[in-house]
Length: 177
Image (tube, rainbow, N blue to C red; front, side):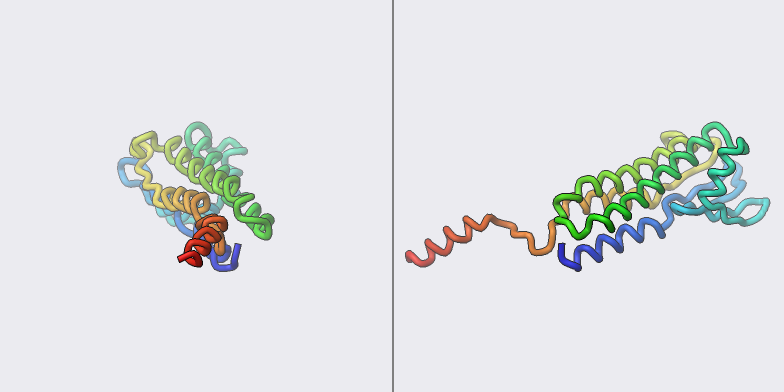
C-alpha cells in the first residue's frame, strides 16, 4: 500500500479513538448528560461535573459498586475499546504486508468494536435507546461502521483496475489497425 492510503487509514483509526462515540442523557428527569469517548466519559450531573475513565468504570464493576445492566454496558464498552485498540495494533504490525492480506481481519476488528459500542448502548437503554435510564445517541457508531466498510472496500494504491492481459489485447488491436 502506498503511503497516501496508509496515512488516511491511520488517521481514520486515530479519529475513532478521539471522537465521541455516545451522547446520553441520564434519567427521564434530566439528572445529567454525558459525552462518552472510547477511553473516558465526561459527565455533568446535579452532583457536579466529572471525568470517568474506562479503568475507573472497570473498577466500579469489579468491586460491585455497579451491577446489572449498567455493569454489562460497561463491559461491552470496554470490549469495543479493546477491539478498536487491537485493530490499530494489528494495522501497525501488518501494514508492511500486502493490503489484501489484512483488510478483512482489520475490517472485522473495527466492525466488532462498533457492534460492541452499539450493544453497550442497547444493554443500558434498550433497543429504542430510550428508557427509564435515559436517552442515548450513539453518534460515533455509524462512523466506526463506515470505517470498517471503507477498509473492506478501499483498493490499494497502484492496484490495477483491469487485468494486464486485457491491456496486451488492446495494444495488439491498436497495432493491427
